[in-house]
Amino acid sequence: MNENEIIKILTGITIVLGLHLIVGLIAITIVIIFPVLSAAFLYGLLAIGVSQFIYIIPAIALLYRSQKWELMKGVIIGAFFTALLNGWVILLIFKK
Image 1 (cartoon, rainbow, N blue to C red):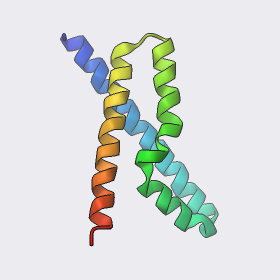
Image 2 (tube, one colour):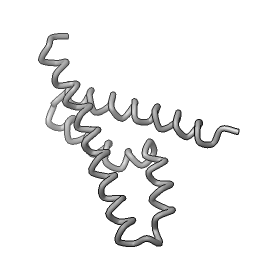
Image 3 (tube, helix red, strand yellow):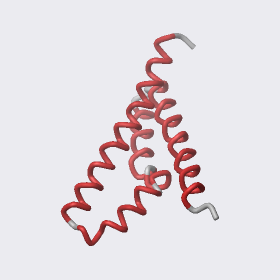
């Protein structure tokens, strides 16, 4: 693996972080506009490991069709680490 591939993989991970930031900002905006939905969006943010598939799978499909393999690997790695972190946080929150 050369340095260029590593940079592209790190760029893919950064894309995932950017997508998470955008979704979080959209959720916060919706909660501010519609306070009644605040509990639903709080649970949605806690389950970002599950809800991320709504925007990660299309991103992976787009990168696959564009044959940008290193970026696709980075997006998959970023999604994997997000799911692991989400599972860990949920276990900490709901730990008895």
